[in-house]
Length: 57
Image (cartoon, rainbow, N blue to C red; front, side, top):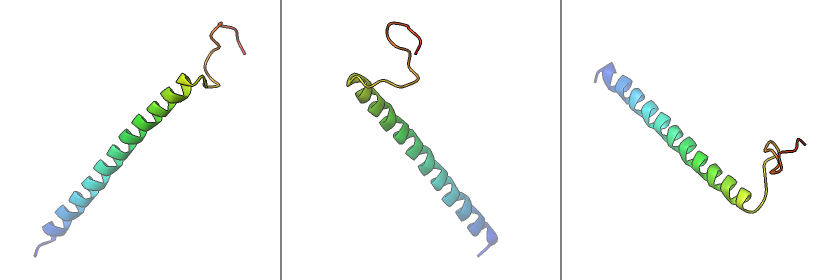
């Protein structure tokens, strides 16, 4: 066996881990966006959001 097998294997495993992390972050971002939509639909607003009447807090 050559060293190339181990090098390509390491790149392959690293690539899979990076893809898994990207997928995890993407799915988690979608879940958080859905959670925010549910909270806002329930009337819970973010502290940073401006009041509807435009008055400063």
